[in-house]
Image 1: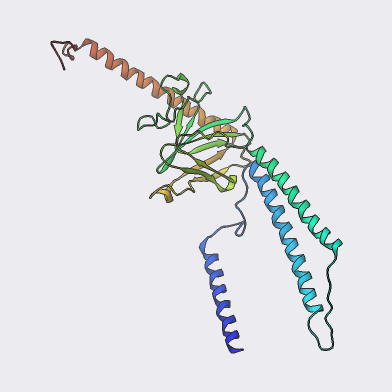
Image 2 (image 1 turned 90 degrees about the vertical axis):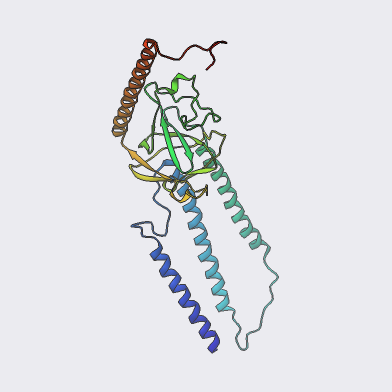
Length: 304
């Protein structure tokens, strides 16, 4: 008896200390023991399914354990009470087998439809963003004044071409980049996901979104619709090297007006940058043409 009591006290202390350390491990103002608050239309639908499964299993657990405890007490061993053997009840067997089967089939059908909906083609009016991952960071590319993203060739990544743009595609000339993902609220956002080196992952808990970025591939199914403004964090949850722990980028969900203003400012800055680059090229060309001491032409007698 003493050994049992000591064993019980020991494990009670261990559980108490573990619970205390768990509480101190993370400080959150709300949803301490739940998922972060959903911030997209798809996330709310996912939560509806998860919550239904949770409350269903909780109710079944309470019901079965209550019946179990009731029968343990009612039919416990007592002096003068004789045991009774029961072979079972076929009708009850059929009922408690048919009910879970019907519930599981319903969940399979609903979850399959939800999966198909979340992986359906993005709406035509989506904001399209090219997201490129690399060791250890993120780059975002938006369409410029023409509203079209430049074509990408996954074999063209380099230090000077971090988005792998096809040189002959003029649609990419006015595209602008950002180190933060800025998106409007209540509007679909279509993500084109790439990786320049190893496998990374696009992970945003509030969006209930996780997708691996695979080198040599364009992942084009990812789209979502934010439902509230705020600041979030894009993190890589695929171990990708020594700097994986710090591979993150800010996400800002803003109003339609604020997004339009931010986008217009980026487009104007890109236009000014293009003008300055064109002027610099023209100056270099004119200087080279007027300089008689330039390099001599290559020929058989004069090899450089």
